[in-house]
Image (cartoon, rainbow, N blue to C red; front, side):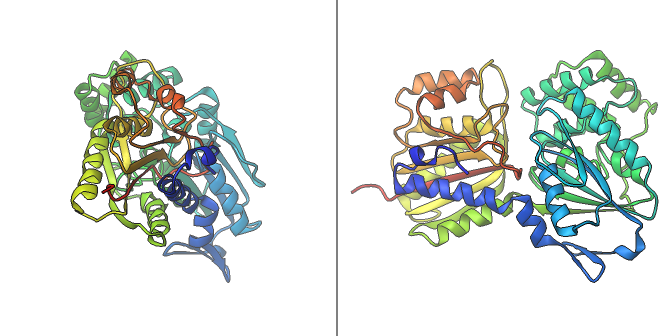
Length: 440
């Protein structure tokens, strides 16, 4: 899974860090998750703790989007055999499916192919009736891969605002509050279009807190945010938004556009099938059978990436030097989603900046690994990086790289990048600190 594993696994500690990452990513694979949580028994479809009598439906249709939506669709085809009548998903790195059509779109900035795929999905959703069971795989990346401009907005407007929001340092729930109010498919739009069909959201969460209304901007979920909230996000982060975007949001505040549905959608059930804990639990199990003791710090780490890195480095140092909160040899694990306020023009992402900031501290007897479980950190081709006390020999140059948001080439020159390619899943970030006892 990790392409450069042999060159990265230079010590047992490095090897253990990589094993934790691989176990976490593997545990969140859609084929495994779907096989564990979805089944058909005597004509009844079981989804987690939900039951659907298939005799009540004339058709099973599949519509969805996200980086792993195609892999989820393929896994559903395997479990449901030939029961899926038709379907369509939009994704970024398509895999082969049998019944479900796949449209390839761009991420993180939406493109015309994704817009056309989203248009087809909403059109097909409107065709469904009460005798249809609509399965909707929703995974991280769906916000960009299901772009359907609302009102008179254009794709260029969504492209511009997406870039500005991603670089602003805003949290994902804030970014998605804006995107929901510029879209005809997000913020419950898909579910509303599909009524009165029974809609089953199959959610692979890449957001802190696992709110289905935030994952992929919630195409099948109700939404508590408003047009006014969206404008407040743009104002707070001083986002340079196109005039058309501001005009659309202001018209929404004035009541000229319908709000996203705040109330529960009675014809919809959303199930979070995998999340950060899926990966963290698997990584913890790897540590548990080693000579190290595991400690999960949190699945909800957020905020500026470099600041989160400093906080976790401090905990690792405390463990090494005082045995608190856990005595070495130990492994600290965490998940969540940190952000980067982009001020430079370099190549990097939150996990690369996390690892580089940890590497600058040069902590002896501590190995740090940080990856995005989808295999692409930010807009780079690296999942993340692996660093130790020797990785950064020139802290000043490393700090410059951070200021310029250029962590990838800096870490690449030091053979610290972790490369997996597209992993077929997306349950947010996974971070590992392996702590050995200090040398006497």
